[in-house]
Image (tube, rainbow, N blue to C red; front, side):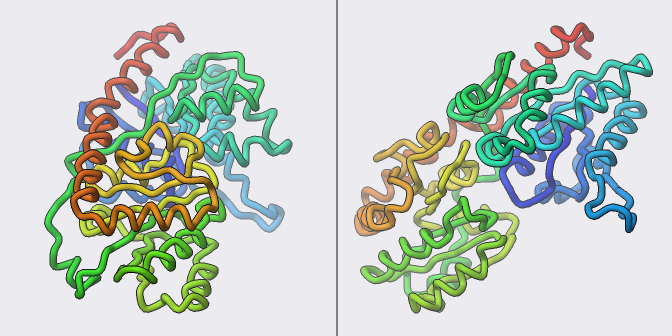
Length: 380
């Protein structure tokens, strides 16, 4: 099958999932054409059957902002023509679903029919998509999609509740590559970060407001007052400066390490004892899944799709948004009891196995075949 994948290249869930999906499909022998304005973060090596197409666009003085959507549509049409795509899979509704529809119409005028699937990842529905500026276009392009998927049951229901959707939405969860994300000996790293045997807490994100980075630091501050600990922060974004200042204000700067946009993150997960995810909302929680795959229990908020992933009291704990005292108490409960911590680690990786790439990938392939059959195109 020849599949086009449109995604954002940035350090975030939708781009990571799209790229990992493309690589997994390529390993199965499918030809995958990834279309984005920059090489995606996880497309970090040559992969057989994966082809990258960069969207370039002119920036004329007339334009206050370069018309990316027009350039993206043109690139989709170009790739579809010359790579003979069977199917287009766009990740994140805005603006990708609308550009896919436009490309489909342009190709149809040439006698080419290109079915497209839209995968919803979260803020394209829960935050940006609800804005009146975009809502009608989102509803229209989803209804015109030949298939729609969501990464959690919660997100599927949110979409139905907030948009005029007349079609079925399939739930296909995010996945993790257990060959890559697994517990591995990295004692030399651990000794460098925690030379006195301190417990290591970890948070990874794009440091946006929705991730509540201040809560991460407040939880750590409460933990570090009661036992030796270090905090590793992976990622970057608009709240980085806020985080640094809060560390100074709480006098924990010497116990917090900002690692930036680190890849591979599994090297850091391998030495961590606990993962903190106090988000305002999470449609799925891919970072939590990758942590559990590396035997790292998760302290998270009881929001969005997280309860579908993190089993409260088994693979970690779920707390109310903003309740940093409860999160800290739950963290201390595990960090002070080595036997219980080890039990949670083993249970975490068992839960992660339910979302193994090898288990989820066939669901995407079956969905592709279903869409092609419904659209009247033969399955390659």
